[in-house]
Length: 234
Image 1 (cartoon, rainbow, N blue to C red):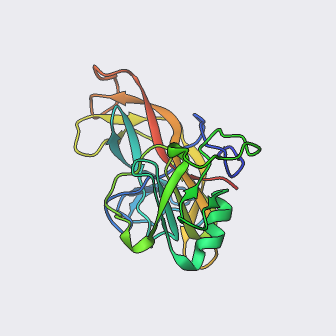
Image 2 (cartoon, rainbow, N blue to C red):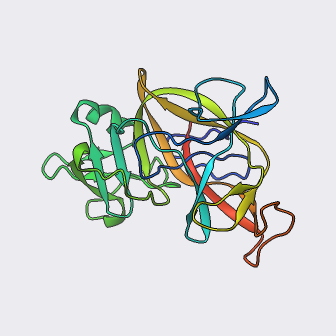
């Protein structure tokens, strides 16, 4: 089952998709990964490098929800932070980033007016719309240790692929709880040679929270937990 495709402005909200979120690192973490060809579990695989690999994701807390930790291997070409109202841009990809973001850039102030998820493409953004205006900063100022916020956007240079996520009683980092959900196959990006493409951070699916290591019973928290992460929309 693949992730639902949307427009460039669309925001993926589906219980049938899940994807990795950024982590406080610039290298992929070691994790257990199912190897369908051998029927065993192996560790240390880089997600999205080929078909037929089921990745057991690293899960972190995200308020009352959880997010999947998938750190980028390289600095993105651009990053839009909804929390700080800033857009960090590599000047070499400025034109491409503005096109992918449907942004209007003020020639006098360099303020980027970027539509939010759900905005109509036919509705122009008026000057002074603080929720949709972002200060431009160099990509070198972006802090990869900052946790993403819902609605954040990043432009990654690489190629699109699909990743299958295996939610078989996966532990939530720094807690005693675990998450279970159906296996999910989603669209993602592999940084490296390729073109600049867009990923959005938001609600990707839902799982069940468990208190015991066997996931035989739910915890005292609500059974259903929201899963956040990054998704590429072809």
